Length: 234
Image (spheres, rainbow, N blue to C red):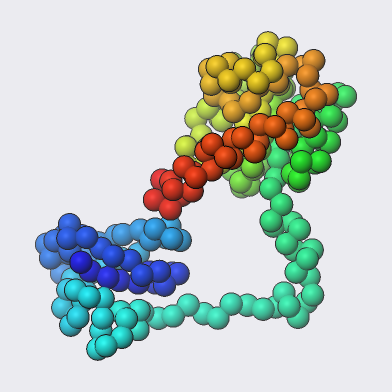
């Protein structure tokens, strides 16, 4: 069993015999790509790893193999001197929600419910703007009304974008669809629409209560699974 240290986060990794065999068969000058299970960053290994004494036990000259790896730079503590930790944290750590509704009382209700639950809410006037936002921001929740785009849900660009989103991102987004066709909290209808929750127009006024009930249940059910998938790099 080989033991190496991730050059990015210094996590000690145990590499199996298959990886060792692949290293033995690796042409000179080539590198084998592996991915750290902690920081999810890839790094390369070459055949020189096999020639180091003590590699079987992850020890070089009595020290951990990490002694051969350049340590990461010390963390910046500029935020201490600038005294802006609280302000910066309030922006970075608060989960974001994207609300895609036409201007209406229902839109204001959804924004208030999401804000009360702890989301930092953003809006987009068009599907193109919404898709562009999704490319650069990891939203924790998206609220979409079925009539947000002309032509409805099925032909809407944004809903198609969400349906095609890679699972490595999609599984971390609470996707809520709102409209007259939906039966509130009907899981079968949500599944058929590639959403997590569906809400009828007549129940939007109760959205705050619905979120308080469904989000903790969702996190309790899928949270451990998503964490395992994150660690596995999937």
